Image 1 (cartoon, helix red, strand yellow):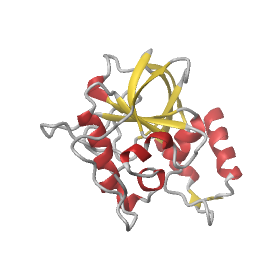
Image 2 (cartoon, rainbow, N blue to C red; image 1 turned 30 degrees about the vertical axis):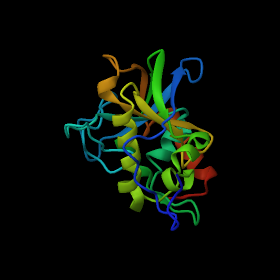
Image 3 (cartoon, rainbow, N blue to C red; image 1 turned 90 degrees about the vertical axis):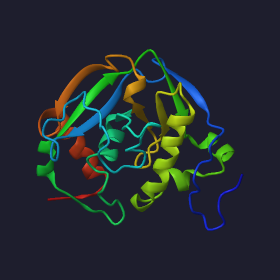
Length: 218
């Protein structure tokens, strides 16, 4: 199976050769999630998106049309910042970052179940699907309608998968997961801590990253 000649991301077939792998605590002991209360004031550390949003891999649906409850996590705080707070800030040329916006953001530290099964969208397993990282992970938001079809196919075709896993676009040193809420235990994870990004050491940590990226603070 080969990609279309024009380089566009093709739609998944009814039966794809997805790679399902197991993630254990020894690989990543803690994960990180950033949530924002700007548009959804009641959001908290345990809030899964339930059909709202417009991201690379969500929202997606079950076979019956109900929303898959989704939740993004990253393996480092820096990746969580890059994939959320700084997601839309250009890096070249350096864009502007509104420091006051930090009042809406919180960082969550969490521990996932001891064993988690996920569909791997990491680079070694994309050729068997006939697609590339550039098409699936590194493409701009204009292609989200196409990339979401792959996360939905992974969810529907792999009934035992609890997430999709991939390398962060904005910080390629880190791993990311999109969790499928209905397939996780209750509770789905253990919250180890929660900190506002507008105050204290996490604010300092994020602003060090902003300055290392040479972004313009406003």
